[in-house]
Length: 54
Image 1 (cartoon, rainbow, N blue to C red):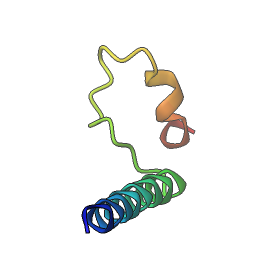
Image 2: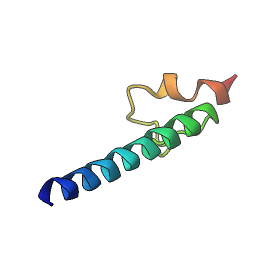
Image 3: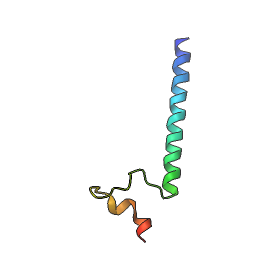
Image 4: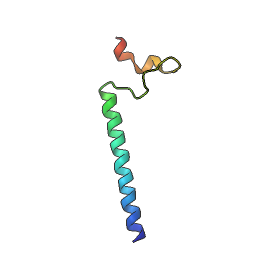
């Protein structure tokens, strides 16, 4: 029975990770950023908000 519990927990973790990746890709397609928009000290400031500046 111990291995059945491990499989269930493993499948739940894989499902949660898949949902997180799906949401991140969806947000990226919609132009949303996860950085918080405080670009003052960010080395990638010129890369992540280029769509808004154009």
